[in-house]
Amino acid sequence: MNPQGAILNVNLAGLALRNPVILAAGTCGYLDEMNDVIDLARVGAVVTKSITRLPRDGNATWRIIETRSGMMNAIGLANVGVEAFARDLAPRIASTPATVIGSIAGFSIDDYVAVAAAMDDCDAIHAVEINVSCPNVHGGTEFGADPRALAELVRALRPVLSRARLFVKLSPIANGPLAIKDVAKAAIDAGAQPAGPNSRPGADAICLANTMPAMAIDVHTCRPRLANITGGLSGPAVHPIAVKLVHDCYRAVAKDSATPIIGIGGVLTWQDAAEFILAGATAVEMGTALFVDPRSPLNVVAGLEKWARAQGAASITELVGGVKLE
Image (cartoon, rainbow, N blue to C red):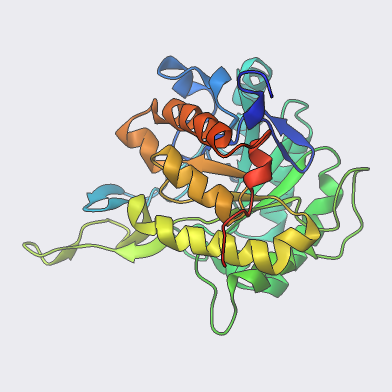
């Protein structure tokens, strides 16, 4: 039997994590701010705030509101920009207790490439998550909704990522007749030659999924509750949707290509995380839960370990995609 905790060790395209619980981009500060309330050495990884080429103030307030079944946000990718990130924040990454995954957002291929190159230059960043699916800015879902545009973006990024793995964070919405498997397949099979010895032609992992485009209206003022009018819905309301997306993607493209999936959406308890794993996710991200209880990831880690042992697994990875359909 594995020693205490080792049963939760996972491998994300060669990136070794102590457990499958990751703190999601935009919910835990830029880097290690959450270490004041939670021991980051006890989670698998932390994803930085999404960094863009130039600094952004983001959207006006209100830009976060509570709903009956979750949270809506329209932050608008507020961040210090890649120059300040490389100068002021990157030097702290090596001392961060958890594995750090860089998050990248942009509005053009050149934007993504510039930030990816800067992050690849940082030895302490071993993976980047490209946010091609932000519903809170104009044009923020363009790459994540168009397989051809996404493949072109991935092909442009591969040459500049000589070390860091490439994780692609997709939208829960695919336009027209497209399904999530079509967009995921475009990211995985982008077609460029691998830049590093352990790289794939396309994405090293798929992240499913970003927030669901949504809107809320104040019935007293008759105005939208978010200053941006619309935003992204997260939390328990989107969890069953995200579980199906992970299941569909795993069965259609990820399993055969051995591409790991990171399940994202409404993970508040270990049971939520376990659902994602059974659907086909190798790891999970937690975001909205951090606003409810910043220490909830530790409860999820403990619960997953007990669950994996109760299932008779030597490693939690044995349970990936293990939902019984017959």
